[in-house]
Amino acid sequence: MSSEHVRQLKPFLSVFFVIATLFSIVFLKMEERRMSYVVLKNTREFKKNKEMKKQKEIQLAKLTRPQLVETVATKKLTLKRATQAQIIHLNPSVSLSYLHKEGRP
Image (cartoon, rainbow, N blue to C red; front, side):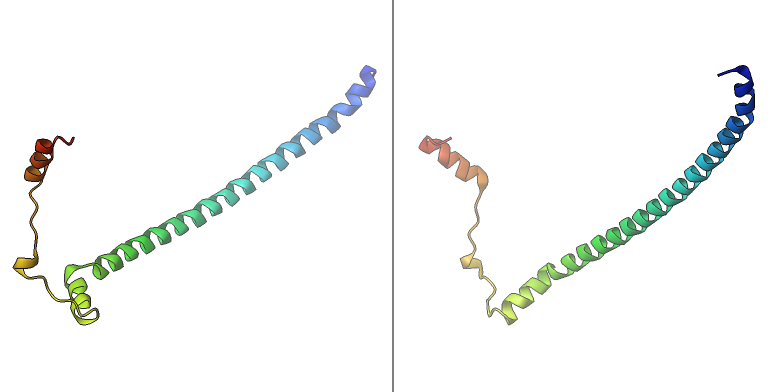
């Protein structure tokens, strides 16, 4: 290529470079906007899931409270409350010392 050809191509190359730079800037701005929408969507979904988890924990606490369990056991399952004679108290230190006397680990 002669210097004349290079001099004729310089304006076209500079215009091409400017246009390519502008397109790149527009593309990056669009990509930034798209990513911000993705982050917004994920944030909303996270908050929704966090709220659902909190509601489920509250619901579980309500369902497993001792008064409700006792009511279901006595009314629906026809169970009776244990008397004092039916309750067996285990003392862990006594049972462990018993096992050591027997030669068990």
